[in-house]
Length: 216
Image: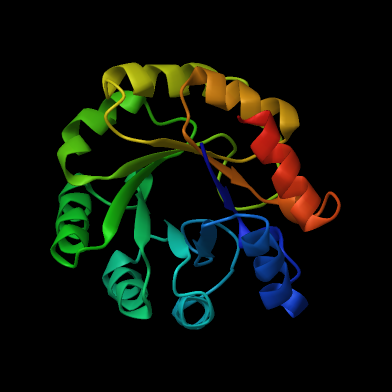
């Protein structure tokens, strides 16, 4: 199991310290939510943060969850900034555009992920599975942190795992805590995004250790 803390829930005024605390506790990938105020009604980080992150933590993976319907502007910018994995929303563009940008990421030797919002059927994965290295199933509606895990997500994780025959890692994002992390793991998820649980529920190192122990 891989835990990818979402820095959206970290202390923005002391972001480096929060990231360092998680790295010291054993984290090797961070989930960076990019919201443009159009595809979702919220704003977050930009390419400069990713560039600074990779300069400070070059051995740690930067996973970019792109919540934007402007891939022509942002995908090349985050590739240039040093993103290790860029995840695109199926709902944010046409299938033709999605194919184009997945091809672009593969050509740039950046891992590509496909994100499905809660109402999107997992069957769409069959069209793109040859071009992606990871699937992200949203277990809340995208746009804001701190939401509750949707119970319907469990069956979607199981369906996706069966559809992909276990060939791609399945990530879950939203409402993750000690209970829902284990539920998602048991359903077939292999990557867990945890935001509030890691950064707002106690000492960061302790929360990371606790979640790692639960997921063993």
